[in-house]
Image 1 (spheres, rainbow, N blue to C red):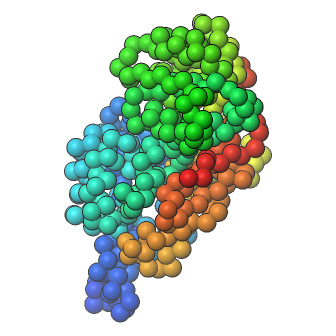
Image 2: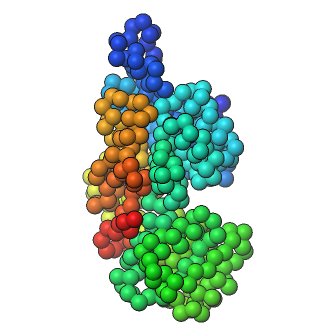
Length: 406
C-alpha cells in the first residue's frame, strides 16, 4: 500500500484543464485542495516506529474513502487522502505537515496520530487557519477551542473519562474516599482535572492523589499510600504497562477498591492477561463502540455492515481490531461533515461544519452515543458506557454516561 516515499494516496479522478472548467469550478481552483473533480486532504501517522500498529487506523480510513468515491464522492468530487509516515517522530511530523500544506496544498488535515506529533504542528496549522480535525489523541487540550480553534480531537478525552468514572462512583458510594493514581504527564493530569470538574469544592476532602513517573519501575509504594489513606474508589490514570501493574499490585495487597482503568489500557492481551484474569475481576473501564469480536453483536446490523466494509475495502485488516473500528467511525463522521458543506470546501466552511455536528450516529457506536460539536465544544464524543471484567471477558452494564457539562 505504501509508496517508496512513504506516502499513501487514495486518488480521485484525473484533473481537468482549467479552460474546460465551468465558472463556479474555476473559482474552486483558488481554494487549497479543491478542484472541479477533487477534494484533497492529508494526515500523518505511524506506518513505522514504536506505535506502527496504529497505522491501521488510516488504512481503514483509506478504504472508507475509496468506498465513498465508488459511490460518487462528495458534491461531485472524488476524495484524495494523502497519508505520510512520520514514524511517531514530532520533528518528522512537522516536516510532513508542512509538505502536505505547502506542497500538496491540502484543504485540511485529518486524523493525525499522537499527542507529541500533533503538539509539534498545532501552532503552525492554527496560525495558517488549516482545519486540524478528528485527531488520534486522548488529551483534553485538543478540546481547547479558545487556544486552538482550528483543532479538534475525536474520541473521549482522559478528562471526560475521569468525569464519567467519578460520576458513577458517587452514584454508588456518595461518601467515597477516592484515590487518584496518575502519571505525571498531560494524560495523568487530565484525570485529576476530570475529578475536580465533578467534585468541585469537595475534591480536597474526598480525594487522595498520588503521582508517578512513566520511567518508574514500580508503583507499589503509591498503591500502599492510597490503601493506607482508606481509599475505597481508585481511578488509575495510567498508560502502558502500568495498567497491569496497578491491577496486580491491588490484588497482592489484598485490597478491594472499586477500581477504574482507562479504556486505553483495557486490552485483554496487553493488560488483563499480564495482570491475571482472576486478579482483574471487578475492574471497571469504559467503552463507546461496539466490539465486533463480541458474540453479543454477531447479529447486529451495524456490525454486519462494518464487517462487510472491511471484507471488501480493507481485507488485510483485522475487523476485530478496535483501531479499525475507530478508523471506520471517524471517516464516516468526516464524510457527514463534508456533506454538510454543500459544496463549499473553503477552509472556513469546513471548520464551520466541524463545529456544527448535531447528534450524528454511526452503526459502530453503542446505541445512544452520538457525535456532537459546536464552536465551544471540540470534544465530538463525550458519552461512554461502563464495562466490568468478569474473569473471562468485559461485560457492559448500566446506562450511557456523559462527561460533566463545563
